[in-house]
Image (cartoon, rainbow, N blue to C red; front, side):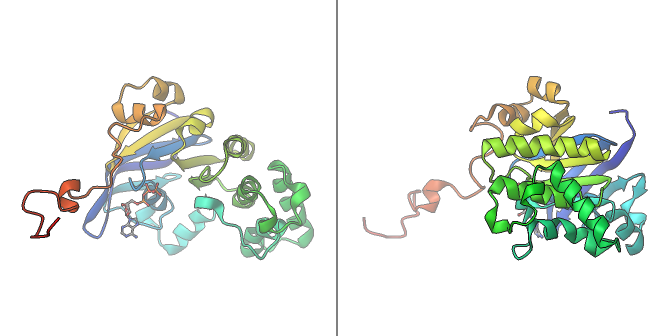
Length: 275
Ligand SMILES: Nc1ncnc2c1ncn2[C@@H]1O[C@H](COP(=O)(O)OP(=O)(O)OP(=O)(O)O)[C@@H](O)[C@H]1O
């Protein structure tokens, strides 16, 4: 990818204590693009997002955002940069005791001193963009799952971030809502002139809306490419994801002792029990 990068992850490794999670990952996110990070459960996708926001520091390697090495920034510098980033967390939880309007207004009230009339206009503009202007007075409990996710999207972009990070934006949604949310992520990215990173299991939807995909396996990049390249990929890990095979390099079982051993069937493991 030759376009100017907004995010550069170079040879990044990260361990929780002595447990390595990422082992020399490199990825580049050009300005204005939507990039997906895909991988099995627990492979380190959320950890990667937290390294990009500077919440975690790499054990080795460099993370640069708009050319700035996050490790070189003091707290003030990091905070300044983070104000231009937004994160939609898994399930995009709304504040249950605030209306849709107040949920979307929340970041504006927290981070700006804008007058009420401007806040109202900005909130209604973002709600209009996600098709929920008419729902601004509803409480989160009155929304469907898809509507709640769209309200969370409006809140995530209300400060016009330069970088939006989505952690499993499609989780728990029905197929129609997944497509709606996917199209909105793309539309909001392009309308705002933002750059987006999506962490997802949902390769089907991601292939429809992203410019580039990275596949993480066992702490390394197992494959990468444009949607067309990924669809044609011969890499077994990527193929398993794209074609949804249950069998392949992505293990079905969490690592464990042998089944026979665990249930006491292995030789010498009966411990004198009578049948
Ligand atoms: N604070 C922590 N301390 C220790 N280990 C952690 C911590 N956070 C995550 N891990 C472990 O690091 C690994 C990567 O976690 P991470 O949340 O980044 O994975 P993920 O790919 O986002 O998973 P999922 O798709 O299931 O959300 C997991 O095995 C997890 O158990």
